[in-house]
Image 1 (tube, helix red, strand yellow):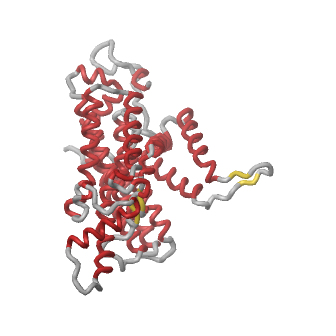
Image 2: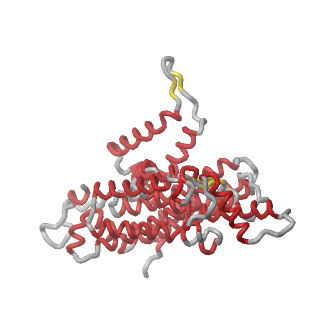
Image 3: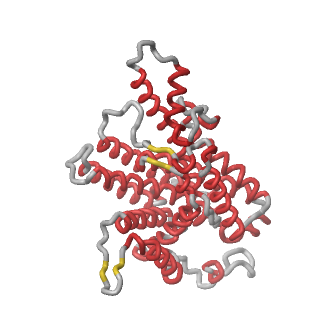
Amino acid sequence: MTRSFLARNPSVLWFLLILSAFTLVVTLLAEGFGLGLIPTAFVKVLGKTLCLCLVALAMDLIWGYTGILSLGHMAFFALGGYMLGMWLMYARTEEIVVQSLAGSPIPATPDEVAQGVATQIFGVVGASELPVVWSFAHSAWLQLPLVLIVPGLFALIFGWLAFRARVNGVYLSILTQAMTLALALYLFQNDSGLRGNNGLSGLQNLPGLGEVPQSTLSISFFLASAALLAAGYVTLAWITAGKFGSALRAIRDDEQRLRFLGYPVEGYKLFVFTLTAMIAAIAGALYYPQAGIINPAELAPIASIYLAVWVAIGGRGRLYGAVIGAAFVSLLSSWFTGGTAPSIPLGFYTIHWVDWWTVLLGLSFVLVTLFAPKGIGGLFDRFAHIGTPERHGADLGPDAGSLQEREAQE
């Protein structure tokens, strides 16, 4: 009898148990539904961290399992936030405009309401008309699907052009970084239709829920983030555990050999690139309502580099490693840059961690690369006695010239 997926992958069950316990503890201690021991601001930090863990999972699938170092996936993360943020900002502004016009002797027409919304949103950039990209922002049913459609279509077109030309390695990394930079520079312009450098703000105020306190909304977003992280982990674990996952690892280890065997390598890479872009977009759509604001700076190439650093520190090629790396670095970053970490006076100089955090992060990345290439996740492998099978130098194929154990480990 074939064993169940969870029986064959106990790490998935352990992850779900730990995530469930963590979610329950935070919920019971939060201000919204619990004892009030965890402040709302920290609940939002934890919710945002779970979203970052989800995008780290996507990065691990594309880089750790497929071997494609994308330095542009935070662009898809931000695009997902923009797509949801447009509806949130429009709907919330519409409520404000309707309330302000309620006292008029003559009821406002829909066109007057729409004009008032456009003026309120785009007056900051000197405009009073809704751009074409906001055509669906008035309707949640029309706008919310764009969270997946826009980043997914963007990734599909970009990936098709890149993989069809067989751009690989560092050249593909540079190309994804250039894509991110070009998109960020475009969004910085006021005529981009997304308010330029001002971005979208007030996203924490959900339409129709103005009377609901932020403490309640924060724990609701936290629970939604935890649920999506669990679903994302199980889905990607299922993908990587099957034949499709074996093909992805083969692309990472020896793409040419897999192509010679007749596998549609470009199709696999395009599918994974598009899928991970959509996962990143979902994570961004949940992240920015908890952050409250999004602007083009979120698309800066450095953000995608940070994402790669998180996965490397956690241990790429291990889904739980990506989660560990993202959570560890994100929470540590909040502590060092939030003014909580005490400064260290040295007499001749005082170390302020706000200024030195990026240096510390870069140094950690270098040390992990040199001395612990398997990352933090490798420590769990060691404790669980997970390693490369001992084949004693035997051939890994039917012929005497097949790949050897030593070669497979390199």
